[in-house]
Structure formats: C-alpha cells, structure tokens
Picture 1 (cartoon, rainbow, N blue to C red):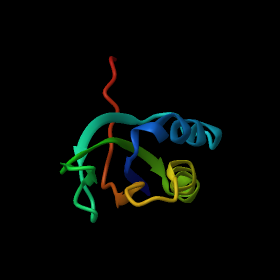
Picture 2 (cartoon, rainbow, N blue to C red; picture 1 turned 45 degrees about the vertical axis):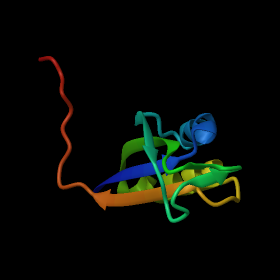
Picture 3 (cartoon, rainbow, N blue to C red; picture 1 turned 135 degrees about the horizontal axis):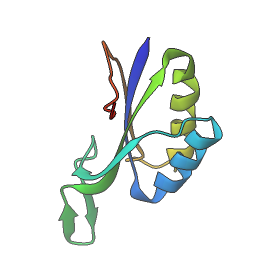
Length: 102
C-alpha cells in the first residue's frame, strides 16, 4: 500500500532531512516554503511577537515497506530538541499516478 508523508520542518534542517532520506534510498519529494505556527503560537523575541514562522513543507510518497525508515530518517534529521521542530503526518493513498509522455 502506498503512503503519503507530509513533514513540516525547520528550514535550517532541510538539507539534513533530504540527505537522511537519500541515505535510505528515498529520492523523490516535493518541497515548499510555508509559514505557520504550532502549539507555541509563534515566538516572542524581545518586544516583538512573530505569529507565524518560516517552515519547510516536504511531501513524499513511499511504499509501506519504506514508511518506517522514511519517518525515522525525518524525525532524527529534523530534531533540534527544541519546541517547534515540526510535525510528521502519514496518510494512506488510494492511488497515485505518474504523468508521462507516451
């Protein structure tokens, strides 16, 4: 069964996460810069409050047998040990198709 992984991570951890996935043999992904916030509802620096923070959204589709390795690679590579490291979502895909030229 095919799984979709969506991960919201810190921008400074993107290269490490991609390298960790590649080490597991997982190369295809889609990346997008996004803004958002988690439980912390932003961050306060001095007198300035930032309601939304820069994050990177990664989306990848893997076979079920690759799922645990992919999720673990993301978890380890994205972790700084601080609040706001990110979130990983996993969903089952009913179907995926490749667009190709015949």
